[in-house]
Length: 159
Image 1 (cartoon, rainbow, N blue to C red):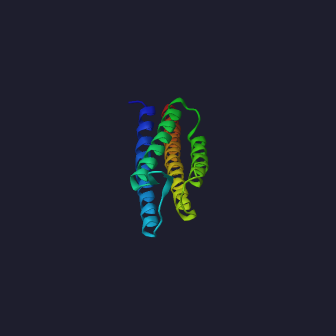
Image 2 (image 1 turned 45 degrees about the vertical axis):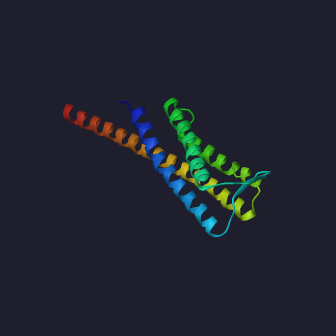
Image 3 (image 1 turned 60 degrees about the vertical axis):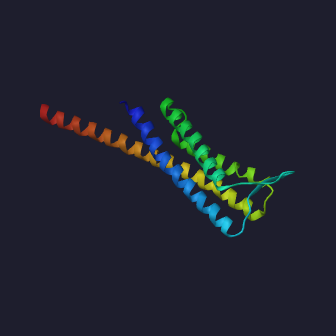
């Protein structure tokens, strides 16, 4: 197993934990909104209002997170762009995707609550990539320190 495979597995593991966390937080936000009397209506058609349900919130959270993780694993494997750049892209996508909520047929409170969910996903994605990035940097520093210590011990033995 090469280091790229280990990195991908670690990234996917961290991402899965963060995705489940984001989905749980979004489910809680949705539940609080519903308990407060918010109605999340995406659009109103001749058949009636098309409601945004909890399963929509959770599945959208997991799907968007999954797309981001696949992008991160691919970028990590080809070493372009780096995880810091993907963190920036993830944050921008989270903020820009809030615009989708402006066009739904709901109250300002419902739109704001849904927008908050986008930001939760973005924050969780950025956090997962930051943990992966700092863990990788620590491993690289540990490897460099080990090489330096080994070189020092070899030079002492040779002397």
